[in-house]
Length: 284
Length: 284
Image 1 (tube, rainbow over the protein chains, first blue to last red):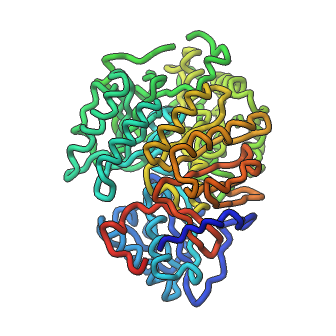
Image 2 (cartoon, chains in turn purple, yellow; image 1 turned 45 degrees about the vertical axis):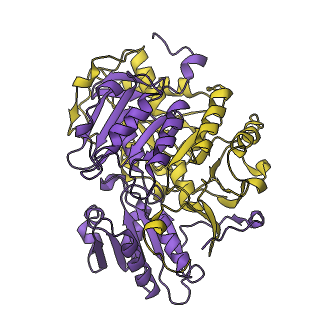
Image 3 (cartoon, rainbow over the protein chains, first blue to last red; image 1 turned 90 degrees about the vertical axis):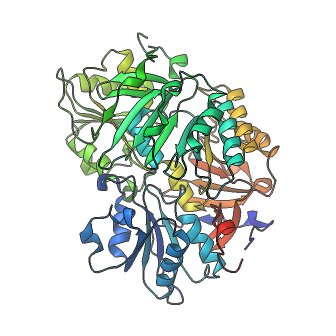
């Protein structure tokens, strides 16, 4: 399935908006990979809602399907699968599209950030369907953006995004990325920081990062962003209690300029963009 | 304005949804910092649209205000400012909120990723208004997510986001981040890659990155994502013509596993998550 072509720089696609519904070929339905955003329907893009409304079939992990208004799923072929069944789920969605159904695969957040868009494209290619099937990716608000909005403004400067799940990635590679990101003074966003089964990775990650940065560096934790039982917690590296972190959490570790600010909503993080060096921002 | 507090780990905010409109204090209006998404209204979250509809005043760079349906701005106090006037713009918005107007500051993309949320929070703090004013950040679909959706699935694995604008950041710091990100095999997303005045940074950045990665590594370029004159271009590091890159572009440089795939829409990028090592994905 290696398909990189050395002379591939010649082709160019211009002015072909992806939201235009392509005519289906060979009887295949349109296959859309849709990000629902963090959870609150008010943060789900109209394009995502419209894709679901216009679909014949909707496929997703049951927790993601629960984020969709039930009336939107009325009369549709809904295929719900358990976690860790990603390959089966995407293959089932492709089967439905091959059978002529306009099919949507849903993810929470953005389907393009550790989401299902990659696996869908990979399977479409490996099944030789790339010329027969229209595949469309509809972006959503990623968990990192939802978490950042609740934490104040931690992502005003360069940041690195790392998943601590070592189910599909060797731990050494994850650790190298954490070390380099901390060395280069990136703000660091951690996805999948901890689960019941993966209980040592976060402590190890903080140890790797902690060797490079100050213990008073601010850290923000958001659980269930834009969902029920949302919680937001800001402290310092030295004080983070990792036992409160779970797989529904996003962790943001500041860079050397990030500071904790007191707001009406509680403590929050601010990574200044650097305007204070160029302009007088008033008393400080 | 340094306000980090060493004992700050004690406080915790739980179950306080940010979309609940707080009662205004001291006569101040609510100040919302809103991300409009990449441009297409179909990718703007309902919460952002509602914030604008309910506001008395809307403040933003003129190009961002043009993304809003004119009828949504009818009868509102609209304050449009030129680029590079960020501090004036945010101060004007704060002035309006102090005067009791519910005020929205708009950015394109996500206001929390290189957006206005940081500067607003910084100025609210430096003006001593943090206890008097409710400031709310409404996330949007960031440019990186819009670009990724058009490029296929480049962000299925860990990625680093770097702005090449050295107006507020020393170039050496930017170069170090690029070097470390490439060394650690991150997918790299470049914001603000090139403008008429900043014309050498991108070539220099690619030189720094190019020392660490293979010349056949895929690169994706998206201009005007989800706007008029959108263009999507995929090639290899060795073949990228940087003269076609401008300040409305997002550039995505793959990691060592990213490959170029041929789709109905043209060439696209795929960074596999790693399922193929665990599962048989069929013929490949």
